[in-house]
Length: 214
Length: 214
Image (cartoon, rainbow over all chains, first blue to last red; front, side, top):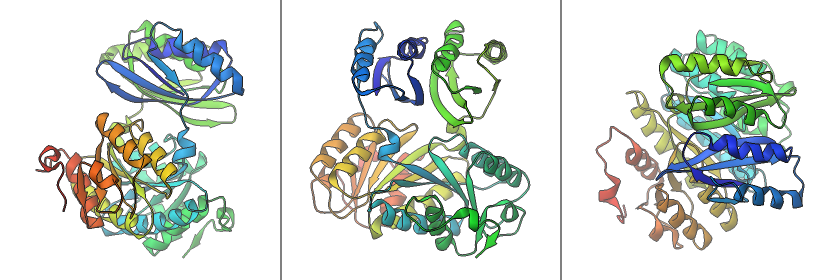
C-alpha cells in the first residue's frame, strides 16, 4: 500500500503503530517520493487477510498525519527479481545485452526478471557495490563484468555468497574468478547464464555448475 | 545505518521510536534481508549531527529487539541516480548498450549513474512499470524502448512527468512518443542521451530539448 504524509520526524513511527495494532509484518518498505513537504511511503505486508486490509487502510486514513492511503501493486509483481551487473569498459555493456535478451525471453512467458547495471572501476568502489548487493531489495545474482578484479572485491564476493547471492564472473585476471559460483569467458553468454541461473523456468541448476568455467 | 532484529511485527515501530526521540527524519528505509527469522533494515537519516549518530546507535543497540546496529554507506553514494529502461525485443538491449557506455564515461570521472532494465511487453504491464518508476528510490529518468506503445502507457507517462521523472522514448507508433520529453530514433543514441539528461557534468539541458525528435 501507498501512504502520503508530511515529510517530518515521527511519521514512520505513527504509521508502523497501526501495522503493529493489526499484528501485520512489514516485508518491504521504502520512501518513494519526497517533495513539497510531503513524503510517499510504500509498504508490503504479510499476515493480513483480504478484508483486514480495508480496516487497516481506514485506520491509517484516520491518523492525523495521513493525507492519503491506498492499495498499490508490489514491486515484486512489477519488476521481479534483480540481477546486478557491475564493472567497466566494453564488456559490461555486452553482459547486459546478453542478460536483457534472455530476460526478455523469460518475461514474455510470464516471469519478471530485471537487469540493473552500475558501470564502475576501482577496487574500493567495486567492493562497496558488491557488498551492497546483499542489501538491495529483490537482488538475487551479481555479475562481475571487468578485466581485473581481486583483493577487497574478492572478500566482498565471499560475504554476499554467504548471504545467498549467486555470483558470476567473466574470466579475468585477479582472484575474483576463483571466488565466484561460475566463470564465463564470453560476456554475452555470461549475461544469458546469469538469467538462466535465477529463472524459475530454465533447466539450469547453479548448484550443478559451481566452480565451472565456460 | 544497518539494524538487525527478529523478523516479526512491531520491530520497525520500535526502531522508529528511537529516531523520533532524536527528532531524526528518515529519508530512506528498506528491508535488505530476511532469513532465518532475522531481518536487516537499512536507514538513511537527516538532521542528525556527527556525534549524535553514535548516541542514536547506542540507543538502538539498547532496544531488546536489536541484535546489531552499525553505520553503513548510503545507496545514493554507492549506486547513485537510476535510469530505468522498459521495453521489449531487439531495441531494449541496444538502448542499454548506449546508456551503460555513457554512464561508464561519467562514473569514471566520479559520478554515480545506474541503468536498470526490465524487459516487458503488453500495455498493462508497461503502464504498471512506468507508474512504478515514480516510486522507485533514486529513479530520475525512464526510457521507453519498444516499437508500439500508447493508451494506458501514455497516461502513465503524463503522471510520472508530473512527479519530476524525465521520459525519453524511441521514435515509434502509438501516442507515447508525443507524451515524452524527448524522442530519439536510434536506440544507442537514446540510451546515451538519457544519461546526458541526468548527468551533473554533461552540457545537455533537457529543458531546452523538450519536444525535440532526433
